[in-house]
Length: 370
Length: 267
Image 1 (cartoon, helix red, strand yellow):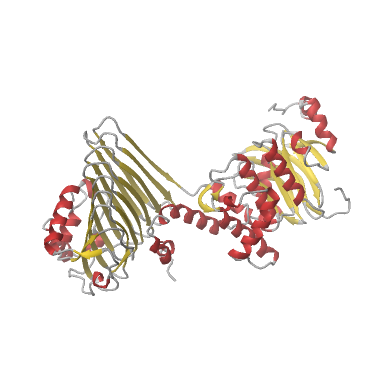
Image 2: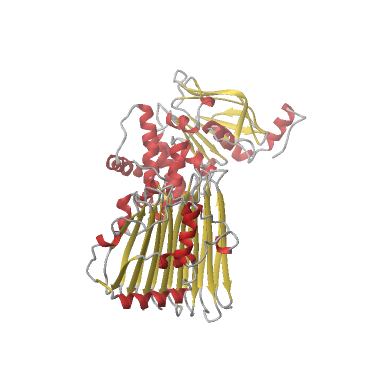
């Protein structure tokens, strides 16, 4: 059943953000209906602080509030995140904050962010400084089991030679919403691997905004988003190169079933100073239903003239030749379809941090709950 | 091995089939008994590969007339997976690459589907690994190929070995090998042919579809059939393949013209 917007919630969210809710006239929100977000109760989420439970491994210490604020301001400015509505909402919603400094080879760290059955808006901020040469593997595991909303702002600053492997595993609930903005700045010689796997939310909006502040860094993005029923999943990614010799390798995969709707907008900015950038973006969609809808758009803004920037988009159904091959070996049509679907998703899921495997992510994302 | 009293495994009668409403098979008759090796030869477009796909149940082909019985049961009533489970195997001319699906997992699921049909217990991961490592020897295949995605990035020869490995695991009663020799160098051809010979026995039968004598130098057929314009034009022993090698297919056109002066299409 489609979500019904509550007028009081819309006004409350707009007041928190200090800005009206974006609508269809905003280019970035053209395909994304915020009704599920407005159907949650107009109140702060009241459960225990999910971050309070986080046990910090060696090599990770907490930041002082003043450091945290400085970090947030710097990175939001570098990535151009300040004006994004989900960031404004998060900032205005008195978020619970976890601010960490990572030195040397730390981790792995797993954060469970379960909005559970409590109503309202859960607002969280995760701030990370990775010092020069530091490395961290971090898994954010979201979940929910009611009509509530999670707003997470992740801010990370990668020092020279730092390595961050960040995974977002977000199996949702058909009544819940997730707004996740990831503002990440990368110094030269740093490496970011961001793998996101999202499915089953009434509304999910992921906004990775990455800036290579002087180029010469490596960014690897892997994303899987699944929609079924009336779900809407939206990813707006943005990668900017503020210097030469940067690398981007981006793969965005979608499985669209039922009357689900998937939106992908992949922006890549290569200004004149970013010569010798090597960027590749591929969007692939598996369409399993005639009622599902997919909007996918690469948005490459290339001013530098000596760069490699490849992009591509495919939309297809399960391949008949592959199905027949499996059937001709005695594998029933249903099981063959599942094998093919699993193979399609696994290309992204296997790039989540190691801790994700124990959670058996695909059945969670497909809502195949025990 | 020809034994007139051996059980009849496959009985094809007056089979007509079309694809996209274009008739391809126009009255195929063929009976295959246990222990026999048959070869079907013919030019491109004669209907050889269509015959193999129709028998395996490919959804793109429609049977418009005739019958196919497998061990007395109506084969055409069955889904492709049911045909495979009861012992029919198609070795593909172009084995399909399936990214993301592990070859080992695929082989295990397929083997267990066939085992369940035969009333054998399902093999767990460990028991299956033992079985597959034993069967790899049939085609001298590197175990590393088990860890890769199904056929992905395999060379032509590796794909065909993977087909014969599947045959060794599924233990079919009727194996149809569609141009298994195409794209193979002489060493790979020898390994694949050797695998087929190891698996052929008195209780099963093999139907080889091929253009060339070179495969039949390595696998000796009991019967050779020449196909043209969607039917079997002539049947003989292994010497018929040698005769074709000498004379080519020109006589086929003459014979077709004599049979059907109105409808001959020269492929």
